[in-house]
Length: 132
Image (cartoon, rainbow, N blue to C red):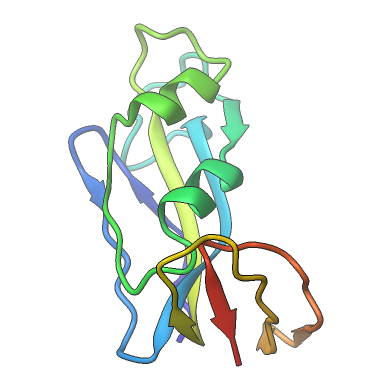
């Protein structure tokens, strides 16, 4: 299962959910004022944003579900945009077969394919998950 990237505006929540036996793997995430659209109606300070994939990995990757509300203080701290302007979250994830673990000391192996690009032999901590 691959979710298409979406925008989450002020007072909305990013709430990915994976089927049993699968966990979230964050693919990309930005927080700020990327472009005029559903979340921004005016072209004012557009283009300021921060890559927040590490914060979103910590909150969501390796879990069957998670919830991140906008605004989220840790994401707000990361953006270079003026703090008094409305920012939004842009996030993309996929579900991968995996087993969640209680400890974050487990090192996982990811074997999946995303848009034709094989991801294999990734030796990293992702929320304490062992991937098949």
